[in-house]
Amino acid sequence: MGTSRRQFLGLTAAAVGSAAVGITPANASASCQATGTLYLGTYTSESGGGAGVGLASYDVATGQLSSTGVLAGVQDPSFLIRSSSGRNLYAVNEQSSGGVTAIAVDSPGHLRVLNRQPNGGSAPCHLALVANSKYLLSANYGSGDISVHPVKTDGSLGARTDLVKHAGSAPHAHQVVQDPTGSYVLAVDLGTDTIYTYTIANGKLSLKSQAKVKTGAGPRHLAFHPNGRYAYVANELNSTITVLQYDGATGKVTPGAAQATAPAGPTNYPGEVIVSPDGRFAYLTNRGHNSIAVFAVESGGASLRRIGTPSCGGDWPRHVTLDPTGKLMFVSNQRSNNITTLAVDVQTGGLTQKSSFTTPIPVCVLPG
Image (tube, rainbow, N blue to C red; front, side, top):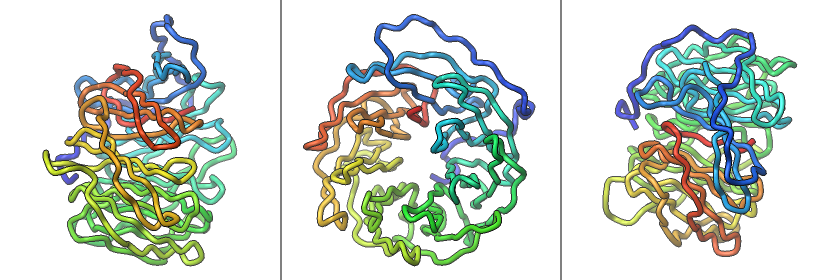
């Protein structure tokens, strides 16, 4: 949300080369049997931030998290994604001179840096692997553009092949995502209130269409329904969520109805939006109201009905994700330095808090 999002700092450490970077050990004691791995995004250049990509394990039965270390040396890894093979992670370096870092997953919870590439933009905040994972795209919030890097066979990143600037007085690219057909790339821009549709070929993006939501809404992130015909975009600046109709044949986005994400009260800034694996529910983080908006998905995906706003268990829920079973939800509470685990009732969509885990400035949780 504008310049108040965070203070963007320049690179404060030398770029990480292709040499392996070790894991800093954490307290090895754990009170639960770990059955899953999590990778944690943070800010390293902020006071009280982390030292790199955090690692944790979690117990499926209790939802309890335990720290298992940190991959030190990755600067401001505020957003993380995983390759479909599971052999690589990619992190943004959300700094004024932005970059992207490729990481090898030698085994779950055991990481090493492959390389880092400058991406030509400012404050990258989101990533997507597209075109059968041939390219890594990054959305640059500060400079309002999209960067393209080829992915090499070993998972490392090649030099940038494209940088596409969004037109407008104050573009702020906030998300980039491949559509369910694999044919198009969608970029969500908070500053221009626009969702852009691109194709990609030979490392270059080509604009095909664009769709505007309500002026001043500030679209931040979208999530597709499993049927691919609808998506839902969280609007950060007017605290709404908009249903989007999607044409997978053309990549055209058509905005539809919007509704409030929280009851009247404190100023609220929606963050992340996700859809349950079965497509019956959508969830959205409310920063300010400090809740998770729960929506029933109706009419085959064409409409949403808000059915609850339970507490997120912390302050400023930046990011939310589900574990592979869809029965556990992890919420990154940026300002209270904790990740809450919520049990998901897959029949009703209801959420129940199970545990809370303290960690430095959590802004992204990625199941391993």
